[in-house]
Length: 261
Image 1 (cartoon, rainbow, N blue to C red):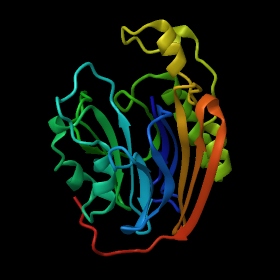
Image 2 (image 1 turned 180 degrees about the horizontal axis):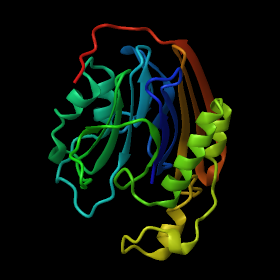
Image 3 (image 1 turned 45 degrees about the vertical axis):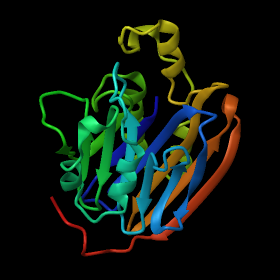
């Protein structure tokens, strides 16, 4: 039940601030965030099972992040959702243009955020609503989990409010990571009604999920600030034990090669 909180102010010195938790089974092999030898501009963790990633950025100012979208059925042989993040980050296409090329039915359910340095797009192969997808997002603070953007899940609503205040205060990386450790369980009446067992909804409702088999594996914080990119990842082990933390800071390298939608 991953979570991405983000504040988007495209005309400001801090166009994008992100705090995200990756929730996954602890046995799934994962490599901590680093620059990839085969793609030296790409900074991301790596899923060693399928080879893709869930969140990353580049030296040229691109960013992408993914959550699974809960659904009852998946394609019989789905393509790796993590490849969507990797392929965008290693391309030069604009965010919306790339999103429009995705063959949605080939993948299990997903939500996808794509930032090309100038525009932020949201895509999903499951979400429905009044606005056609993919679409560009306007300035604001958002919370995205395993339902459509705008879903009234407590961790999304409360998280969007929290990151709005943090961004307004020009917070640093540590404050974003601290926000992601909230393991409080919302009141039952605030939980989503998905016809699931109440005990299950309580277990996955917190921002930070603790478990022996499944839980929050990594917290990531990313700040685009005055031409610099700050990226930190705090990993966690079973039962919420604190693992390795990695921190990166580097100047954004401008490029004129990126296409716009």
